[in-house]
Structures are given as C-alpha cells and as structure tokens.
Image (cartoon, rainbow, N blue to C red; front, top):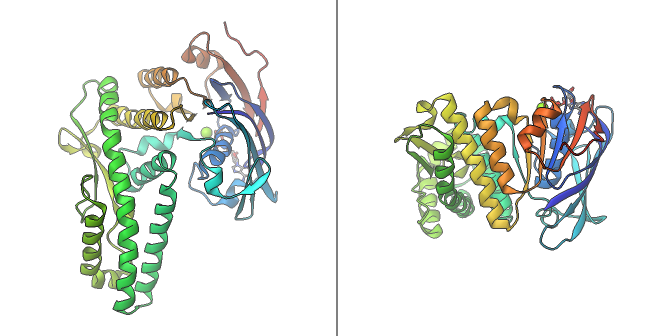
Length: 378
Ligand SMILES: Nc1ncnc2c1ncn2[C@@H]1O[C@H](COP(=O)(O)OP(=O)(O)O)[C@@H](O)[C@H]1O
Ligand SMILES: [Mg+2]
C-alpha cells in the first residue's frame, strides 16, 4: 500500500501542509525543532490510530486551535483501490472518516498499514519491559487486527479487577472477574508468545548479518509467574492464570493491583545465555534493535502480501555510518514506500537512497513544508 497525498491542518506546529508522496522515498528535511517528526506523527496516527509518542490527544492539536485534521489518500498495490482516510481531533475526541463517511476504528484500520522506526526504538533492548511490550502490541495490531479487541478486553478486565480490589469487593465477585482477566489475558499472551516465535529466526539472521562479532541470540516471551511456552494450549494457560490470580488475591488486595498477567510480561533477549541488557555493547544493542525492526517489517510484508509504509524518523543521525547503510540497504530491498526525516543535506540523503531512486523532498521550517521542485538527482 502507498500513501498518495496528505493534507494536515493544525496538527502540532503545522498550520497547513499539503504533501504528495513518491511511491518510493519522500524525505522531510530541515534543522531540529522545525516540525519534521510532527509531520511523521500526523501520518503515523492515521495509519496506526495510536500516537507515535505517548501523549494526550489534546497535545497534538496546534496551540490555540480547536481541532486538528489529517486527510490521506491511500492506494492498495494489489487491487489498485483508492481510499480517502480522514481523522479529526477535537479536545479529547477523535472522529474517523473513510471515503467521507464517519466510521469506527475497525473499518478504518488496515488501509494504511505502517511501521515507524524512531530514536525511541533504540531503547528497545536496553530499556524496561514496557517498551518491549509496546513493540509486541504495535506489531501484532498490524499483523492481526483482531488483536485490538483482545488487548482492549484485557485492559478493561484488569482495570475492573483493580477497582474491585480497591473497593474491597467480596471474594465471590472477584472469582468472576478473575476468570474474565485470565481468559482475555491468556489470548493476549498466546498471541504475543506466538509472534515472538515467528519473529525470532528472522531477527537472528538479520542480527548475524549486522553484528560483528554476533553472540548467540535468543528471544523468548516470558512471564515471571506463568508458563507461557508458545506451544501451551490457551485453555491450559487460562486455567493456571486463574489459579495464580486466586493464589495472589490477598497480596493483590493489600497492594490494590493485579500482580500477574501480560501487562507485566517481557520479551526476554539473551546473548550467549546472559541478558542482553547487561551483556551487550552499545554497538550490539543497536544491531539488535535494527534486526528486530527489520524482522518486524519483513514479517509484516509477508503477512500482508505487500510491504507496509515505513516511517524513519531521524535514523541516520542516531545510527552510526555502518548501521545507517545497513538500514537503507534493507529498506531499498523491501521496495515499499518510505517516508523519512533527516537533518542531513539533500545530497547526503540522495546518496543513501541510491541513484535512480524516485525521491520527493520537502524542506521543513517552523511548521511549513515546502516541496523541492527538483525531483530527479541523476
Ligand atoms: N500542539 C502544538 N502546537 C504548536 N506547536 C507545537 C505543538 N506541539 C509541538 N509543537 C512544536 O513543534 C516543534 C517540534 O517539532 P518536531 O517535529 O519535534 O521537530 P523536528 O523537526 O526536530 O522533528 C517545537 O517547536 C514544539 O514547540
Ligand atoms: Mg524530530
């Protein structure tokens, strides 16, 4: 799938921007603080319906404006079908439109599937487990749209159980809620564990290509309390989950929070058997993150039957020269649409993208995007 055009109004520092995308590379160039990431954030929001950066919706609306508006025209590679997607933010409210008709998230998602690779992702291997859980959730939402329902059901179930713990509800009431938490939690856990298994061989082979020397890499979805082996039946997992919730109930009552479940799980990554976060050098961390992201992209491209739209935010300034080259080589091989931001010059960017590439460039200054008229470099 490809984005054809976009109109952005009153989003962050962008008052009004019109973009026309290359089927290959569209580059948003300019110094820091001008609105490059904001532009990517607007486009990513319409693709994923989740903010790129964790902020309140209100923060996305331009200061002193009532609403923000994003319109994107997308085209499917295989069918050639074109859709107009629209998203309006007003206060805390979001309205979605497809082909000028108001619709819900389920009808909207899937038309502009995208993956973003941002400097925040560089914390994926080193940072806390919440970043890795978010990685799994974002990836799964793209591969299996039905995962959204499972994740929301679980989120609500845990919130309800926590409220009951706070209210010191009767055991009989908690019994019923434990079952809801465990069933939704088991579906979510199974989906994540299965995804980790599917992703691992590709991560491992990309890692060997990128890291030199490459230690033995192992990736496993893990819970500190439950056996979440991917071949375990979901019903068996739900049963042991219920038992664990019962066992921990008194303690959960005291702490007023649910202390077991996928909201606390992790994607455990080891190098030669030791946790990567303790063992890996800076270079190995970067290689690992790059391998994870490339594997996510390739896995999704295979699942969709076409490459997703890829957003690369400021990656060349965050990665060293070798890793940048490896990233761009991999991205070129994928032959999908790429929208990237950079503080580098047009010439440096064009040389990264290779001669003959179709490139649109925009200069970003104080929230204004201006297209470079010179489109061909060769
Ligand atoms: N809601 C908002 N309204 C107006 N300006 C905003 C809003 N949110 C962020 N900004 C401004 O956007 C600018 C940063 O844009 P950003 O896209 O992160 O820059 P960069 O080009 O470095 O990626 C800052 O000047 C910030 O004040
Ligand atoms: Mg930026």
